[in-house]
Amino acid sequence: MAVSRVGITTLPEHGTTGVRDRDGHLANLAGGNTSQGIFILDLSKHNCFPQFGVLPSHIRNIVVVHSRFRMRNIGGSNTETIPGADDSGDFCGSAPLLRQLVLDHCPFPGIPKLLLSATHLCHLDLREIPDLGYFSPQALGAALSVMSRLAALRVEFQLPRYPTSRPPLPLTRSVLPSLTRLVFEGVHEYLEDLLAQIEAPLLNKLRIIFFMDPQFVIPQLHRLINFAESFKKCHTAFVYTSYDAIRFAAFRETHQFPELSFDIRWGVLGRPLSLLAQVCSSSLHLLSTLVQLDIVVPVLSFPQSLWVLNNTRWLELLDPFTAVKDLRLSDQVAPHVCQALEELSEEGAPALQNIFLQGLESLEPVPNFIERVVAARRLSGHPVTVYPWEGRGNYDESTGMIF
Image (cartoon, rainbow, N blue to C red; front, top):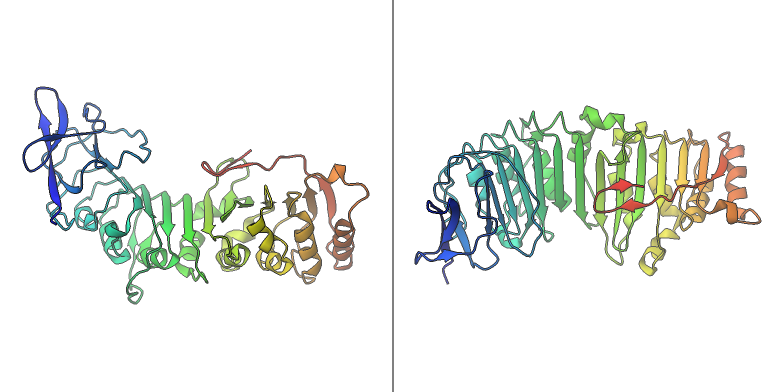
């Protein structure tokens, strides 16, 4: 069955924007008032692709969503003629004055064709991309090459989808001189193929959410981070686990929000410490600037206990943090990390001076694992002092804020 088109039109008697189907019937519209330069189309009740017509001269922000997903407030001012989608979801025409585009849970595989003309785009937000809306990293990279004004990019896939082919690395990369924020959720192969096509020297906020994979090979991600000056100022790192994911976040000394973070959705039978160790390998220069590392496991559930108790995995993760002076541990994970520190070679964690443990003041007598790690570090020539950690080490997963 062919997918119907929906056309967008302006209603002059009301000053609002409406959506009409092929028979000319007015469809439901979320946030139809265009007085603030914002157009929001709700596709939740339409089994169709939108066919965009001429919008009022002040519209430069387009949001297309399913209403069951949360919409955030956006603002701006604009003018634009937005092309239509044919029955396959391909776009025609151009959008040279578009400033902001948000697609939430929308199956538009032809969106890169529209973006090739979006030379004034500043914010591109593609959320919850369904499998039917998949487009290749090469198509997206080609579209990004024309966006010299792009400041924020968000690409989130609903499900793991691997590139069908992986061409050789390009000889040159497109420089995105204005890009400061990047959010990606998907498989690492897609991200690598996309990053191989771009440079972002002013990048200062980065969030990556990986679906679980047996192995992470991410030289392009490391290159992007290593050449961004902002990340070299990070001071503190935070490792946090939830029921089905593990997160690494890096902060500047006085900031509560991370400059960058990696999430790995590992599933019940995953091995998150090994996977995070692959992401946080020695080739990531950022690790050499971090002087504080916090490791927090809020509640030790059954699947977490499968790997938290594995000292070898902690060794893999701790090894590249060569500059850390202060290590802060939640009570659930402290015994196992301390045992891993005992087993590090004499060269391991050479800068470590202080270990802070939650709940230490209530431990009587002093547990054996504390006495052993203190003795082992003294013998290695790198003594440590153990203190109580009075901070709660709480972490807001939705904002990335420590409190």
